[in-house]
Length: 303
Picture 1 (cartoon, rainbow, N blue to C red):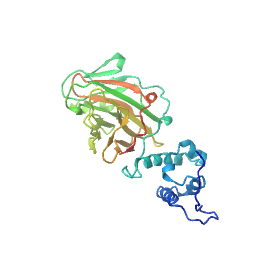
Picture 2: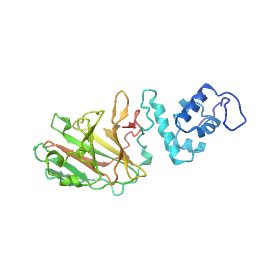
Picture 3: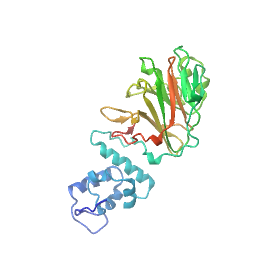
Picture 4: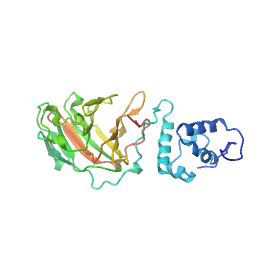
């Protein structure tokens, strides 16, 4: 960071008694509002006395300044992104930003193909493509070759063929057990969100878990779209989920709130997808962190 002229400030616990500058007062209020007031001396003594400058700080700068607790480093990075959103963005302290790409876990083994399915699905290209083989109006499901229980992971599924006007006929998500594969009653055979073990994003923008539909809705899915799912596991073994479309986090206007689920689990979580209409093809693109979609959209809080 370039040298900056530091205005007179009050350092709690020190001898200085000068009044805080207007910008420094905003920094002090911001730190206190986020229960980080212990860092006021650190920020101000290092010349970080303006929120417009602070919001551009990097993880390296935070650590070099003296913030050593990993949880606080992460919290500051999330708050910096919130500052970048401006006053129109979400303000709930419970909202969280998707993790940055540098935090992604090594994929071992990688997610490479669909491995299991319900009866009316077939595999092409060695399991990379799943195809709905009949038109019985029941959802059918496919499950990936690996599950995840820790770290931060991301994968994408491409809607290669989708020759139907009702975009609700596809779904993408996770299961924390494979019991739904054994269901035979109607739509429950593959309707991911009907199950207590399933969390899904539907082609018409709905989300569902345990047969409970969640608002607000996101955008509809079209042929050619890539739907991404990002998981960040917590220390309790559960995960937060965000949904992506063509490399960008799915958000809703005007709040800019990103669509997903919090505290999902417990793991392991299996990647799943489902289709209802004959001829629909879902191509598993697999783990995509090397393609570097934007994991820091301008509005990125999970719902």
